[in-house]
Length: 112
Image (cartoon, rainbow, N blue to C red):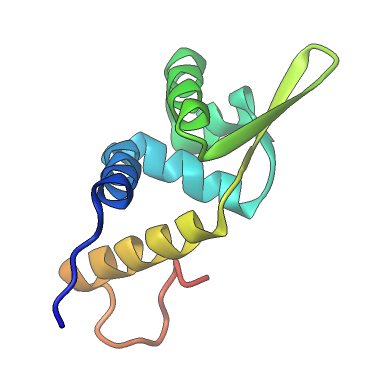
């Protein structure tokens, strides 16, 4: 029997894709899946301004995809969800195939 997602699950999935629809947010999330980081470190890593990274992090936090903790004057961010790791790994693997970088299942840079 053919089934489709209910309205609630379809909405949550679409919202997750919407949050991942920005290249900078994809890079930020992938970096956070490797470990906790500050805004300044993330900005340097993804080659963006701290203001832009802060705005992206605020959206990701509101969407429940990242957590934050304060230590003194610094705020550190981390990814919250292993599902996002698998979703990003598949999307980035697909990108490797689409660009011709990967031609088989071996040697993917983004496999988790």
